[in-house]
Image (cartoon, rainbow, N blue to C red; front, side, top):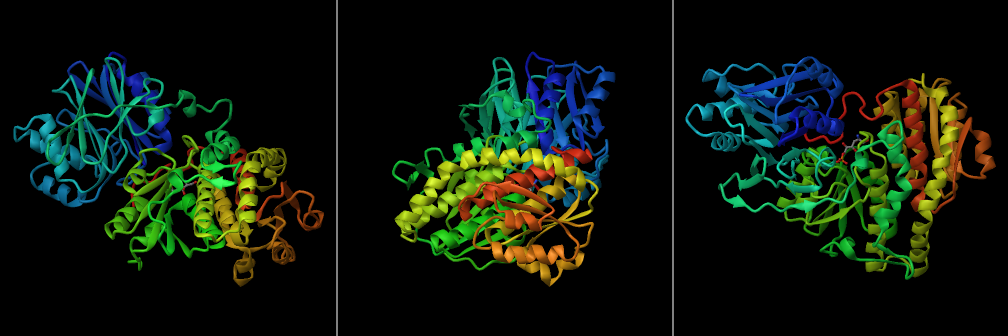
Length: 607
Ligand code: AGP
């Protein structure tokens, strides 16, 4: 949603903050700002647009100091404007915030009635005024922040700096991520690890309801609810600063698509014993195996992985499964049973809808399992069990490698359940496990489709609508392909179950509408061919993802992207790559902001 950065130490705070905010820009990029203690005065600079706008502003304003906080925003309350950009300062105390204060309207009314004057439309500004109100009652800064926080409902990570306290700043967290970077004679805070990597790999992850007082050589953490001091647990992260670099690629999205073969290998490492064709229990062993139904809950791309998971659990493990949008699931009072297993999928582990659904399900005492990419994220910590995808940091707002890793975990998990429940024969299990080993090589090969995709992409940059069709396990792949195109190229795209096309969407097809069909060799091919013919006879431009050497299907298409033959359960991996590359190249040729598309943010920490 938004990104927070904070610094205290010998360096020029402004430089550190800008550098960190750049690395957090994927979290929000409609405005940004910093507050730096310059002598005895807190100086604020805020600008609409990307961090580069803030940098240009700072080129003109001479601000320097060794203590400061910064913020990059994805607007929720109030449009992107300088006034709504963070930090928000009241009487020499500046605040940055990531999250949403749900009771901000009533707090604002109360504060206005007592004389506070608001300058922005944000929910964050109530935090500044609340702190100010407690300071004017004589509380010190630390106490005033705690008193203010106790009035807040919702999710927040905040950083607070005061003109009167030049030796420390304060951070606090409740359901929005915040980490502390421990340096030598300097300390940092950030919303995510990449922002800290150029400076330190020693990190402390703040937990819910924790507040920390951060000075140059000390970090003191307390429980907000009872004031009890907590011993910080410092962990060393094994990551290179290059994870946040493009390493020769034009965009992070491109780099991340090309990491997929390695991600696939990393995600199965230690989980599959190829020699004995077995799945290793490790974290795959869900605490309870005694469940009769699986409910998968997620948003966006993670939901699409969940839809593929439903297919795996039903087809391979023979367990009834449902996949649900977290935002819908929460509010329709679903009928859940004690012997359900609820699986929550989230790349970031911070998505508010998914996190909220997880909390609700946990309260009902139903076993929960998270599939997350970000270690120690809120969803990962809250669920009873967690299986990590090992996709590495994903910076491009459009999720690519994480989707593949999520789907891979779901396939491993379904095989694991099937083995334990005896719903899969030994031969079949061996065959599928063998297919896992072939996958990284096949995926590498699939990346070679890029040259053909680049060649055909210019034909579609002026298209206004796209239709993606798939059947069975490839229907969610079609949905995901359409989502990728929409979010980065701004071309309207719809994914459909190919068999549904004749029930309505076929009316959209004419010579201006490209129809991308997933048509690998397999059980559905004959039916897909009928759908291709239906679209073709309405004048649609047919692009197909087909199996190499399938000349018959190729002849029916205007453009054919040929991929290696693989088992049907593995087709989602092989088919997703060309769809991601197609969206990428169309968007790149259109000149859109591929890594930071308009109106989006990497993790959506508001409902
Ligand atoms: C993916 O390309 C999207 N930007 C978005 O749909 C994303 O998948 C969704 O917001 C869920 O995020 P999560 O996996 O971090 O929970």
